[in-house]
Structures are given as C-alpha cells and as structure tokens.
Length: 150
Image (cartoon, rainbow, N blue to C red):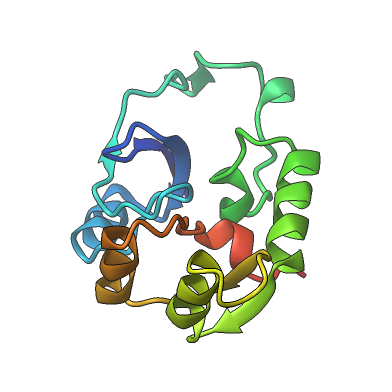
C-alpha cells in the first residue's frame, strides 16, 4: 500500500491510498480519483513530508502517524475532526431527499411556490447548469457526506 498526498484543481488537499504508483496513474487517467470536497477529477500528486530513506521514516514519528488499518475513505477527509464530519452528515441526512425531482423542487422553493425547506437530491450537469443560470442557489455535496457508513 502506498499513500500519496494529493490536491485537486481547487487546492483541496487529501490523501489517497493505492496499491502502487501505476495503480494511481491508471485510476487518475480513468477519472476514478476525485476530490472528496468538490468532486474534481483534476488530481495531482503533491510533495509529501513523509519520506522513507533506508527504512527509516523522516516524517512524523510512528506514534503520530495515522493507523495503517484506517479506511482510505476516512483518510480522505482526515482534515475534518470526526465530530464535525458527523454533524455535517447529520445535517445532510436531515434534509428532505427529493431524489430526481431536485431541480423541480428547487425551482418551486426559489419562486415561492413551495415552502422554504432544506432539500437534497440529484440533478444532471445540464439541470445544474440551468438552475445556476436561473440564479437558484444550491451546492453539490461531496460523496463522503452522502454515502452510507456502517
């Protein structure tokens, strides 16, 4: 397992865990490596402070490092304290899930045809672009906030 420090085009930094450098390259070229904050697929490796030379780590002491058995998905959001991440997920899950009706419901709320409330759902790229052109505020949620954790 190899851990790379990564950054997206928006400057969000995170870690990625890969079987090899070739595995990272293959996944990047297939746009499988995405920013956990903004979902950008333009990911680049950045210099790492963790360097191994002759079997001796020149980075943080082993007691300070992240456990080897920690899940990669959790590492991608390691910059967020667990309590903050839990609160964000709770807020997202408490919003009404309108599924594919999201663009329609967002318009109704925007034009005061429906009560103001927190909603979430899905929209295609074209639907998202149309909502933005109409001046309707919405945000794309990163996968780490919407996926189920067990």
